[in-house]
Image (cartoon, rainbow, N blue to C red; front, side, top):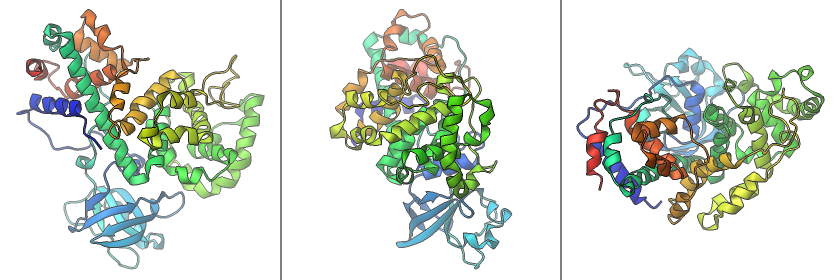
Length: 466
């Protein structure tokens, strides 16, 4: 990939701002569920090359498939360890001792495990052995293996004017814009690195499928959509006809079994009948994922009807029906056409979901777009351009012209802290890249500063930007 020069400039400036500031060792800011850990691993976020606990080099040649039945977490995997290729299963646990706590060592289903991954381990060496008393190679996963920004910051800085507003007010508009544009390119490059790690681990089409599914989850449900697209990989789900594919999506999501047919209107009952006619035949093969410990955790509070994950699953089903037109412009940067790709997404429709918000809602008075302009814009910002710009840098100019269609709470707080009542702030939020740049600055400085702005080094160092 071609490095982006503005991104490097911003990165060097940010490093200079924090030079001399004490750093802490990287770690996970909050406990991670086993499913989240498995999802990060399977997407390639931790990378493909590791060192085992006894010092051997190991490379993941094939991440396999997420197991839906009894036994290890991932089946059909391949690793290369000290030059030798091993094929079998991979088990991933939050703690190394979970191997014995869950009695894997006495379970013959785990005798094909070729790699045991874990996030925590006791100080005293713990050995992984199967029921045949063979040692299983181990890898300790660490937060430092993850690319920057992989865990989104959920906190917010105080909604008030920051000290940086004064030096920014005294800077020329072109200087301010150059900072924002550099931060935007840095942000795009971070997204690109994460996405291309997924490409390296899962292949280009699967990575695209997973990334697009995540954007359908909006902020609250990105993780469940990511896990769903990993459990139901593209190479498997596209082998089914449209009816089975949709039944699989809604069944594995847990939504089919959480809705009583008697609580729905006639049109919905007919739709549910169609889904269940396929789902009951598929269900037995994925019962592990329907267990309460493995069931996807959807966040449904305070969600606009149009953003409900049930409706977004309908949009994903429609995307899969038109997958060729969705993936072809992303498969090769030289064939990219923003207009054609946008048109393909906006034209998606669905017999049921074009007139329903949820499985319990009444029929809408008029058709509602499955994917609107703002969602397309999010897909452009988080999938298309991060994937394509490093491969064809001339697309950066195209990215700069994308308008900003929506803001959010973080954008509003960033504008308030950086500009306050400065009338120029409107000129710095008209484009999508400007919002992205402001978000990056806000996350890098406002959210990393623990002094409530008083001790942040960013305002004093702004004069060094020329």
